[in-house]
Image (cartoon, rainbow, N blue to C red; front, side):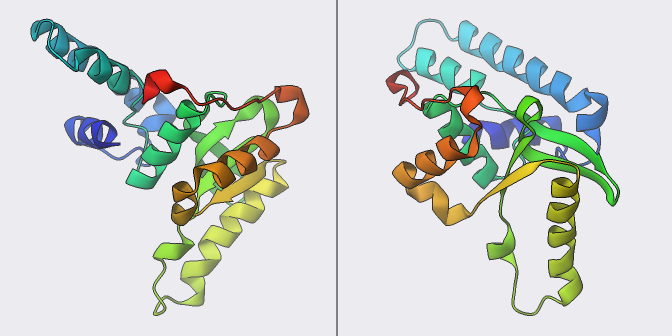
Length: 180
């Protein structure tokens, strides 16, 4: 999670500013991973470099928030199929970037941000996320919402995620101890 934040800061942009569409952020993400790996190589054989390299490879500047980074880590930790991060979807109401998408199964996972809404917000502030959800569903996407507090209960979250994928995906979550 921290590595993803550092990568975003080094690139100097947020994923939702259009860089995902033209591939710039994806290229930057790969180049940053290579740069960080080179730095590790220059350090020689030190304790923790293998784990650090693994964490770098599993991090991404495409994770736009700590919650998204955490969910990305959990998806990998339990062996779920790799999603497309910040996947662009054009709908009748605009271009949206899904936090996690599996285009082959028309599945999206969105980290719910309703918990961040303040009571003082107007109906329009709440209507935009609902319009987004309805537009995505209208395009044939199934959307699973994960709230930030859901990330704390791994057992329940893994069960929800497994049920979200179609049977043909053959998803069988397994904890990868190598990633711990």
